[in-house]
Image 1 (cartoon, rainbow, N blue to C red):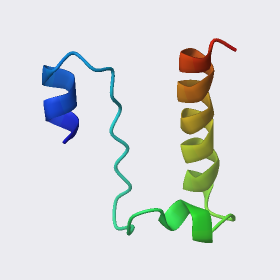
Image 2 (cartoon, one colour; image 1 turned 90 degrees about the vertical axis):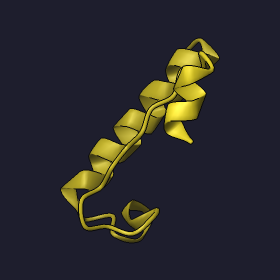
Image 3 (tube, rainbow, N blue to C red; image 1 turned 180 degrees about the horizontal axis):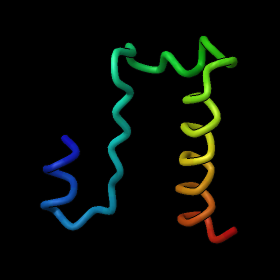
Image 4 (spheres, rainbow, N blue to C red; image 1 turned 90 degrees about the horizontal axis):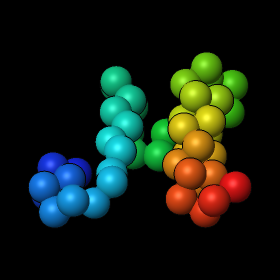
Length: 51
């Protein structure tokens, strides 16, 4: 899906968490990866919502 979006000219970002299930970052708020994921999500929304 990510590649097809990009091929269609859509700005898309793929986040890969090694050894983690989908949305695992929501369940483990003590993991260092959790902060990074939410920083990247916030950056994406800020960029596209004009904040």
